[in-house]
Length: 487
Image (cartoon, rainbow, N blue to C red; front, side, top):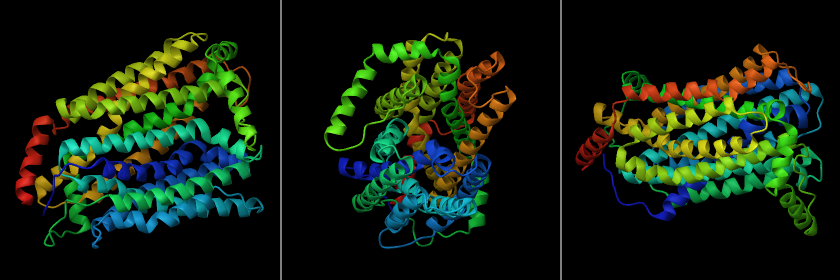
């Protein structure tokens, strides 16, 4: 096996990160708006839509394992993983557009169309994003360069998340001149074109430097057996599931916290005081002046405040990401990840104790949480690349893609479970949809679901890192010994 640990150029880091920006324009849309799109835009019954999303999510999770085995056994003059980014770029764009289109079928036809396009989308997403993620493990064997690459990558992720969570719905309403279906198609057409271009740039600007020797062959059964004996991998799988359970749970429950707990008048006064309403008014004058439809930001205070709340958290996640590399280089990934995951959990818990009128405190806490959690974001994926190195170090075989596929499996399971837990908690606490005033028990449950419950899951995630043995000392040992072995 050979490896070049040269310093990565800014061009290669930016080029690599554009691949995640492209993928997350679709992934974040699926996370945030797929249920809304099916029920409110395409008019599929909610129960049917939930079955499509749940089954499709689990199917995509298991397909990742298959894709990992395929990618690890791909051999081309371009490498193992880069070709998949190129091969899937146009199909990804086309299927993304189809999945968010609204052909005029009957109810059965709509269900079949949604089912087929969603399943195709999760397949092409896995075929694209699994090799993309694994590519980070073979671009460089240098731990510091890997930390830097992850930081660039997740700034791009946060940009995509900001676009989707804060701007997609207003853009769809604006471009569709109030027609949500037409607006979604126009926005997704733009995302598809941008995504195809970004994937091609990623392919052209990156290189695979860690190249397995031809004698390094193993069966899928051997790879899976190695995984089961890889303690750091087992811990990272559990950690990934816990992190994404938390993200899905709190992310899905915030809107209820704003709508049913925080005082609506206090939210409206807060938006007016910080100049948000004047900003939207000025923006509308600008966009209508160039011939676009009015930038139709949600009119009610809770929805607008929630959108701004999400945006503030994302912006400060980006700031946190900038601190990730230097801290991880100095103190080691495990220590920094566990420490800041615990602190971000404590900031979540604070949401349970604010009064209904403490809007400013809620926003400040979200900014704090975004910054603290942002520091952990690149480290998670850099640690998974380290686990691939650990596996090679222990077994003299490298199976990068199947290790990443197992983690993405954990990610999708976490998102599915977290979303299901959120719905189950609403039911447990007696939530009644669209009821203006919920019971005290329901409101208390909503507060717990954005604070105590997700905070506890984060704390458990931080605690299990005490058994994760790849500390700063071992990172350096693995890096140096693999460099010598690859020579």
